[in-house]
Length: 216
Image (tube, rainbow, N blue to C red; front, side, top):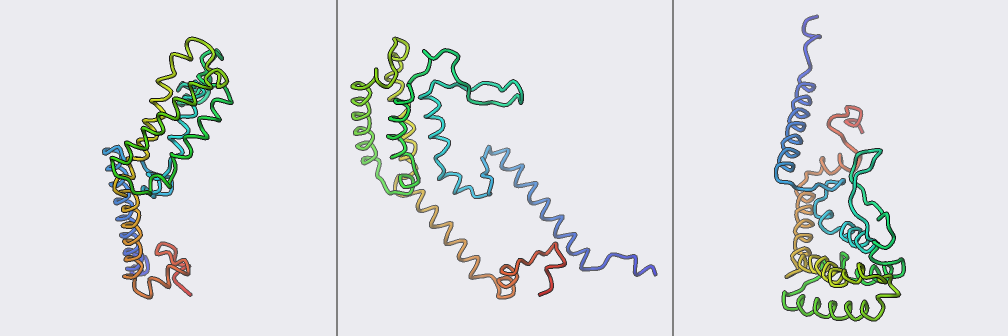
């Protein structure tokens, strides 16, 4: 009777693995917090780096004159609309025109391309010249119809250029594409090195911590 009450060796082994997994996850979380490393929801850090949605969102909010404030209900930081419309940098037409431009440059195609620093300088100079010309010729139609908004003309151009430049700099010498290829090679190597039983278990949804998945 006493032997029946003792934990089975398999149960002890599984419990030990589960404890090691929990400890490893805890250490990784602590390390990421200490280093200030942002984590994507799906755990794919490379995918997080390629995502440009945050940059585009910040630019759009800047064009609309929004600012970061505290939500009265939740206490969290949110983008707030300016109380006075005269503080909105651009009108809807102006925002759409700017967004139509920046989204052509701030995307995954740019990040995964191959550029030298010299070529990036040339591209940024071209974008700066054309962007300045568009704003100068259309600033009133774009909503910059008072003194305050006109004083933000140069800031509007510089902010846009700096964000676009940060996207291009991730593509210097094809660094982002190289990291993506390295990630694919590692993943493929892991799959090749996996023994046939492990590959079969992976296909059928084997879970070490779920005894019902141990049987075919």
